[in-house]
Image (cartoon, rainbow, N blue to C red; front, side, top):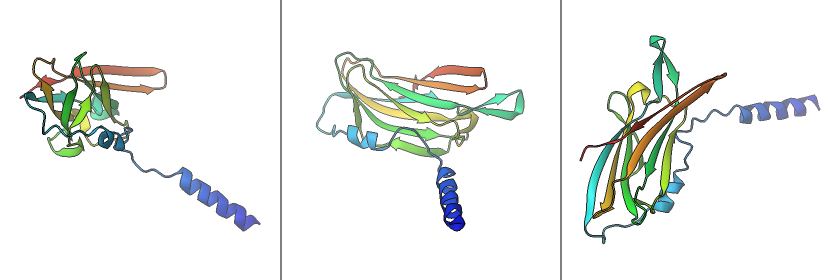
Length: 169
């Protein structure tokens, strides 16, 4: 009986201590559900935007960093047109590609927002991580808005700040 209890306890601890690192709390299946074929759509304007994201910031000195949860918020600012996001690629401080969240067109309905979350434990991007987001919009449609929202709480202290994208193409 003691062996059975010990076995159950070990199994419970093993399952409870499973430390699989999630790269994002947004389920990748969400992207495949939003995929759309835009090859037949004509007169779409192409754009590419740069968005700075901070998964870590310096604290007290250059030798100590503080981890942050980062959200890349991708917003359709049009109240009448659907827009298309072609690719969202995440880079680290040194410009090395870490991962691509989607590389097939997805749609955002008018005024819709979707996000990519970089978990606080995911520090692969470092202090200078960033996104390149490619997109297409109908003629005379307002450009999409991409914002970074970074935050962290520790004890009774909290910190948060935002960044905005810059169109680079």
